[in-house]
Length: 292
Picture 1 (cartoon, rainbow, N blue to C red):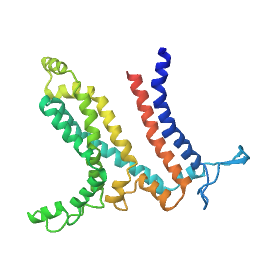
Picture 2: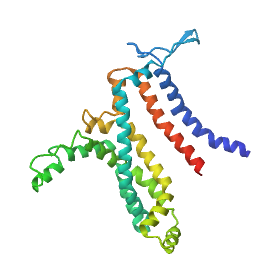
Picture 3: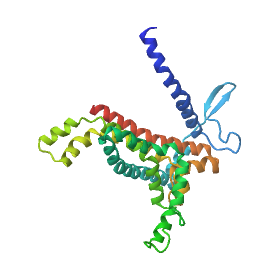
Picture 4: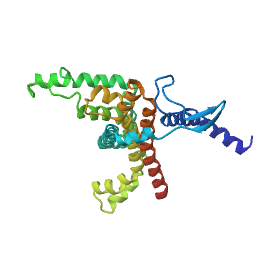
């Protein structure tokens, strides 16, 4: 077996996987986004006029995209999703970095145990964890009951259907995705660099700021992307724990697909959301390539 054939056998399976589960669905959704709504099955028109087996005239248009750009509801949904994902990523970074740093500097005997505690939430369904938070945040939940018994508050706090509930649930759900890449990067750092920095007179804070933090940038970027990307399209947490003001694009997308049955408009929402996520990722990858 030649070397070239071996390379092809290695490359073909992932390309086939991407073709089957990403590119083909992507083009189907893009095609639907160019169609018009109709009250039939399927609930959208064809974007071509057909002469037997052959397409003749292209009838698709960009009306759905223009509608999204003109309607403040969808613009606010995108902006609110980006804002929620951005600040959730920052909070996850602020909480996850010290945890990852402690695990990376822990003794080998403790390291595996600490990593197990980080991964442990993934052993249960995220939906169960969200319902557990609902039970804690409700007016008769554990937090309000405890605070009222010890006399800190006289009436229940309103935690459900607030920004606090949405942000805290996203942070708790996605925090392990921030910790793991940070740990992988920090664990590989050469401690001799910190010793050299200390020998040159740098304080521990200065060594961290000028040595540890820059070298851990790949883990920071990977962790932020792993949190930011799913948080933008999050549906379950805003639907269960957010109020009417927590309008996010995942919830809007669900409403258009399953309640309004407007598949072309929903496909346009999905395509713009994909562009919002892919374009910054491509720019970041190119920037890293130039820096390297």
